[in-house]
Image 1 (spheres, rainbow, N blue to C red):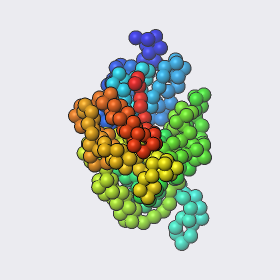
Image 2 (tube, one colour):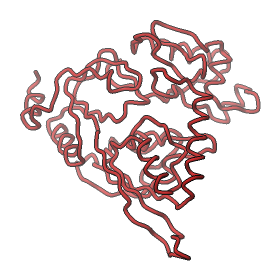
Image 3 (spheres, helix red, strand yellow):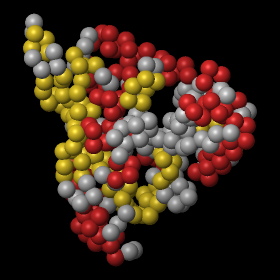
Image 4 (spheres, rainbow, N blue to C red):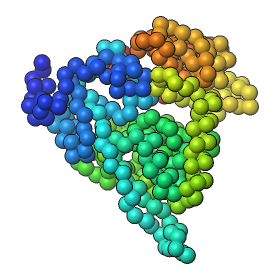
Length: 326
């Protein structure tokens, strides 16, 4: 074992696991082992393990709900930290009260290890609007911030309702930053480049009618059930939708930017390599049909890119995040 690994184990104790297979921690159920693995259950533990590893020069990957990721068959070197932090609470209100109702926002603070589905249920049950369309998402708050998780009917992003967050920056300083810090965009946030670790997030939500919020949330669930593969193993969408300019190049009907449309019309829906398949329900989903490997998935991704490029003249960009040695 590497000297720095031994030192890290001495610092953190027997909760550090060696050669932990990562497949069970992902929604794809694919992937090899991490050299070291640690599950952090509090913000204090999360900070301690990351700072300790950084000081020893051990590479780190923080894993949330394991959606939207593909872990390499060979796994990855360094330390994987499973973020299992779990606190959610109402922080307070902002704005004048009129006729017994707040005219401003209600702030909800949450640890980033909280599953989005749990946060949505909490906020809707409190009669708070802004996150209801994200009901049913398997990832964590941290992952949602990292990718600026979106909903398309109507279009909305998690970043839209972020007020501020606490991060652990590259200098190992805990810092409170405003929404603008993240430079949220389509499937993107600044932390994809900086390597900052988001510890807590404060959302600015609005007061709403609980029954109507549940109706909207359940409608979102119904839409997913109708349009996306259900009861299968997969990470979510594989590719980002194309830009409007690319849609013009591809001459798609009504200027659709759907990556799934392009893959489908390239004749790839239902295509299988090994245990992986391009979903016959929605072509932008690759599913683990039968003990798929990361290699199977990468081959399907490459085939989709090549065929769409050949037929439509646009290159698809991956939304899925690759982790480890590919």
